[in-house]
Length: 213
Image (tube, rainbow, N blue to C red; front, side, top):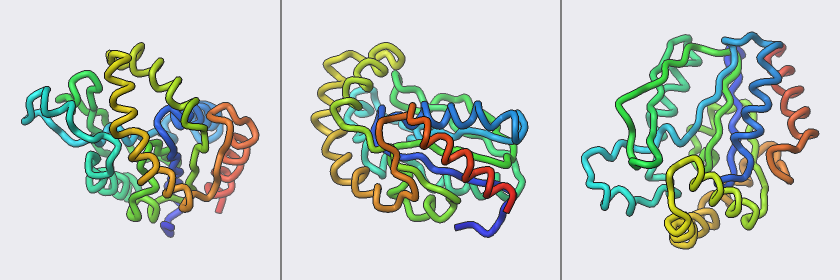
């Protein structure tokens, strides 16, 4: 765990469509008034999918996006360390429809609170070492699948057939191999998804204590 109290980092992991983004955005919105609009930020692990612009679209769709190797955790760790040291960073932008990074980036300035959310965060020891608190969203896989189909078709330009094939080929197997076992590293395990009010209040209170420490 980092020694510095200048920046509190909270990691939220769990299966795809388990409620990570919802609980992260809820905490973000509810803490802004207390810590300041520009003193809290959310970083999504998906932004750090590797650049595949050198590959054809046919090759890109074959990538196993649920394996840790698909993510540039080196860059994520580096940028978190820079933020903790007081430097701004340029976060990559990832296109789900093009299966690669875009040319755009989003600048993030140093924050008092950074909320990370992503499926494989707790599989990486270096990321765990940077976190002041870690959370695992323990949502049943059948619920996650229903949410994922709806989200990927409506928001990410995917077809239902491609979403279901990906789920069978990589999403579920990689969940069992990497994501589910990473639950052992979580400080807090949250059942019933991102609307768990008690879990949200516990996390907010814990972050407040860390800021005062």
